[in-house]
Amino acid sequence: MRKIFARIISAFMPTRNLRRTVRNQLTYGFGKTHYRGGKNNKIVYIDKNNKKHTVRRLPGCNIYFFGNNNYIEIHGPLNALLLNATLHGNSKIVIKPSKYELRHINIDTMTNCTLEIESDFYVNGTLKIEFCNNTKVHIGQDCMFSYNILIRTGDGHKITTLKSNKQINPNQDIFIGNHVWIAGNATILKGAYIPDNTIIGASSLVNKKFTEKNTVIAGVPADVKKRGIKWER
Image (cartoon, one colour):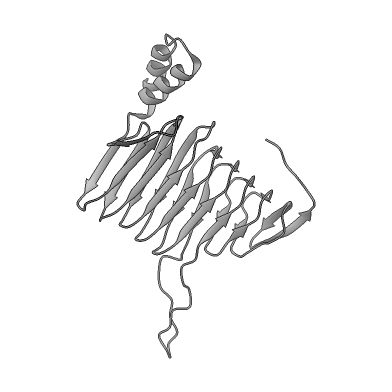
């Protein structure tokens, strides 16, 4: 019923962009920000004229602040459909402008984490980005993600040796280059480095660094399957 009501009301709006904005806000909500203690937590919206606005909430976004010194920067125009972000202290999220809708994105940082999403990012379905402490995820320009993508910068639990008690599974950054297409049900794990113009096959598990551009990478664990390719939307 809520979607039907949103479509009926938005049909009376004079422009296509306004119809879409009203429909999305009525369907997915006007956004909420939840402060769970802490201080110096900030949301900045940068409009199309590159003017910064400090705001309390963002349409279509549910934001949870835990701890201190968290920062979110979103560049407009904003077409967010259920973007959920939880920041646990000294963490930063920057999302550059995109002509595509940001659909069902769930971001969960721990402490001292950074997420950078460059311009014209598109995700077709659920994207989950889970951070462990002191890590960074970079997603380049013009990337296209399918549905049910998981990105994780750590294992979630420490593994140590019996003799020295030394950790053998440290958290690691993840880098995804420009114009990368990630197909459905793929998993990107700590230490992954995906170069520009890469295709990641469906249900693949990427857990290491690749350096060669213009390739198809697929499998569990993933490896290069084809070279010298390019792709278009």
